[in-house]
Figure 1 (cartoon, rainbow, N blue to C red):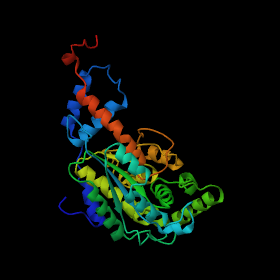
Figure 2: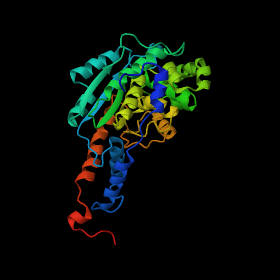
Figure 3: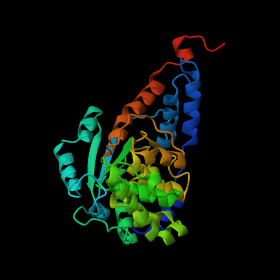
Figure 4: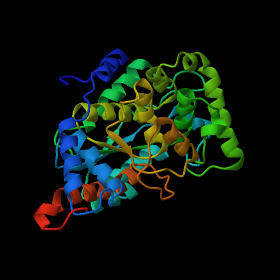
Length: 341
């Protein structure tokens, strides 16, 4: 793209023009898999991952040498409603922690030798309280999507996406209910650790938002719902997913909030997330329901619910293992090993 789209109409044009998988690379990968010194299918999902990587990178020999981790941070107006165990100012404080190297994602990024980037949205100006009106105008949401597109730079082998934003599980639950149906109780979970009356209040706030946006939900335009109930980091993640598709970069999605942001694109077109894999099943209960709704099987389940792309980072070694096994194993002919009788 020569210029980033800055309106929803422009985003919709991008959605209509997304490239598909490289079928020639996919065919070569499947052929080589059948010739490697192992029983067919014995590497399980590593074989599927190698095929997925290659067909979206456009390479018969996939590689994971330049992973990027992009963490988008946004502030939510609904946080002032007391839906989180932490106050709203923690978002900006955690961004500073990221920049100083003190967060979990900093340690995980270093461990896998990934390029970590922190993308701050307009942190000094939270979105509006979505129980009273849209969280964002179309212009603000589209601008955030365009900003997120910058994360998908040429030369990246895989893009890991995550987020930071107090109250974003409230936003994710409301957005999922609007996109896929249900109530606050169907989608809300502890988030940063709320329970009891605070969790009940969180559910009530979500239901209040769903009632306020009843007409928009009935019209069911996914981008409009993103602006109504999402956050700037949600929009930025959606933009990054689109730009990665245009640049043929496979994407690893993190947990509940990140997957909810990407799910907006799935509702626009069920093929839009074919270049994405969800890293894990979050302990946030709505995530399992969301994975079923978008037809994604997570790569692992470690009872995590931190966010900040932590699980996406942990999935990178799985991708590396899939690539090196596919590329480095000998074929039966090369090894002088008899094939299947």
